[in-house]
Every structure is written in C-alpha cells, then in structure tokens.
Image (tube, rainbow, N blue to C red):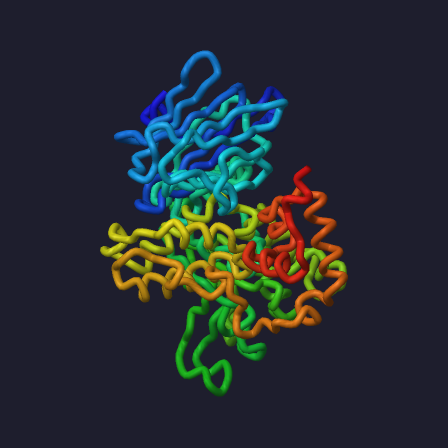
Length: 465
C-alpha cells in the first residue's frame, strides 16, 4: 500500500443505523518540520507486529506480509533504516536502528523505549504521536491522509476519528436549516466552525456575526431586529437589523449566554415565527435565517439557575457540537497551525520551515489559550524569523524552559510547596514516570513540569520500574 492508495474516511452504519466502532492503536504522522504543509496521516496499527521507518524518495506506507508496515518519509535527516516499532508482551516499543541522528521520545534521546498513550516520537525532522487505543469504524482504511486545505470546509481538518465523525455529521446538518449550537473553551475556533457551517450550507445569503456580549443592553432589539426612522430619538433612518441582514444566509450569535432576558424572549419569537418586527413598525417581516450560536458557558446550568430561557436553549440547540481544546487534540496541532500560517504568511507560506527544537517545544506546550494563543505565537514567530527558519528564539519564554515574567519563582506561589510535590509524585507513579503524560493531566507545559522536577528532586526514572 502506498500513499496513493489512501482514501478519505466516510461514515459507516450498522444495521440499526448507528455507526459501529472498535478501539485500535493508532500512530499519527503529525508534522514534517522541514515542510510543514505536507499532509498529516493516521496509521492504524491493528493487526501489525512491526512498523519500520526510514528515508525514502517519497512518502509511502507499504504493507509487507504477513504483519509488517514499512513507512518511508522524504526526510533527509532520517536514515534509510531509522527505527523499528514492535509489540513486546502486548506493549508497543520503539527501538532506534542505529540511525545517524537518533530517535527521541517526548524530547529525550532513546535507543529503546516502551510507548505510553500520547507519546511524541521524533525521527529526523518528522514527528509522530502514538495513541494506545481510539475508537474507529471497523471499515476505516488503514491509512488516512489529511491536509489543512483538503478539509470539508476551512477549519474542519482533523486526524482524530471521533472529531472526523462529528464533522461528517455537521456537514450533513449544515445543509438543513436546523439551528446549531457550537460549544467549547475560549479560542477553540467557534467562529471558524460557524463560517464552515455557512460555507457547507450552500445558502445564498450573507454570513453575519454578532457578539451578544458586546451589544448595549438598551439597543439589543434595535441592533438585532432593526427599526423604523423616528422610532426613538436617535433613529434617523430605517435600519434592517442584523437578523434581516442575514436573510437567506447565516446569523452567528457569539457568546449567546450573555444575551439579557428581554432579548432572549424577542429572539425566541423570531425562531418560532420566522419573522421580525422592527422597532416602530406596525407589521412583521418574514425572514429565512439559519441560526448558529456559540458559547463557552454551560447553558444547561444557566437554564437550571433560571438565567437562560429553557425554551430558547432547546430552540438554539437543534444540533450541538463541542469543540475540543488543543491539549486534547495534540495530533491536529499542525493541521491547525498550517491554516494559521497560511493566513499570516500569505504567498510566503511555502517558504516557512521550523527547526525541530521549535516544533518539539510547541508540541509539548498545552496552549491554554487554544487556537487563539497558537495564532498569536505563530504570528510573532513568523515576523521574528523574517522568512527564515522558525527557531526556539522566535517563540515565547516557555519554549526555552524559562518561567514567564508574571510567574513567581517561589514554590509558595506555584502550588504551595509540599502539596505540589506530593501531587507530582502521585502522578509520576500513576503514569510510570512519563513526563508528558503528567504535564497533560496537570494542564501544564512539559517545561513547567521539568522545572518542578528539578526543584523538588524528582527523578522520573525511579517510577519506570
């Protein structure tokens, strides 16, 4: 099997109409730092006993009977026979094959290592992420390649099987008129998803976005529903309002949880009656609008607390999709980054290169600000690199293992000393000394955990026995 034999995932369903799923070990080819716009790939390890890695004239994935896969990557920093991944007593291990530039796992040079879920593998300038078991459909192809520009719509590229299934469903729902609620942490790309929904919908009208939290309370209804000239003191001309501006298109209501109760009631009428009555008008106006709402707040909890109308919530949540934070989709980091680089670098994007130490640092960072933080980091790095290779010096202090300026150095301010040490010891014992796993559980950068290890004299090797 070569890369030309791969195909895009498509949903399958069992006799009951539900998509069946099995768990399988997976290996994700996430980035070639010398050519960051190359497609990423997902490789199923099910049924394989051995995977070999080496340099090739072009990328290929060749099945070698009976149970071996040969992976070749056009990476001049990889050796022809670079590394071997195999199963020993049911666990996957990786072993360097005497390569010139060595093999790293979670940033550390290794000759042989037992892999844990989420480990970052570095061969030459190519980065892989190993997952012990994720749900996949039984008939998913063994190799799936994905590029940022080959997504169903901009912003919907993913290697993760669960998110791919969610995007498949979203693409179908987008062609209907059902309201959609997009949930997720700040910076996860809710507006990008809303724009993708509009693009997939095929609706001929405009995409109109409104930040509900920024609407002046006294002008919410006028902004949303419009007004007639003379309806109030500042109404010097007729205004159609944002809802009518999105007629036959999509109205994106960002931060919907910030909408005040009077405006909630008025919006509910629009959803129920498909018409708006501008302030000062004597008759309503029919509208054909697709509503997409977004929130980083728990709307269901707000409904229970009585601060958000239950009937409006159920109208807006005709279909729900929850976006994952970047720390939970490490495999997709460079699919997201590639689209952001193209946005910032424009025609110069093809020249962008990353030093492996810079790529490694970004994989190890948890990006609490999600894609929004990633965009700012990349924007600054590209400007500082001025068309050259992005290095550690072009990234924020965390990339070099330095504490940020606003982080106090004292243990009393980073976790209250001894309680933090006890928590670290517990997590290292639980995760058998895996620094990256501990960092992910704590929601901290790997560099921060390493600083704590040094401060408290914790040796991860002691927990690997």
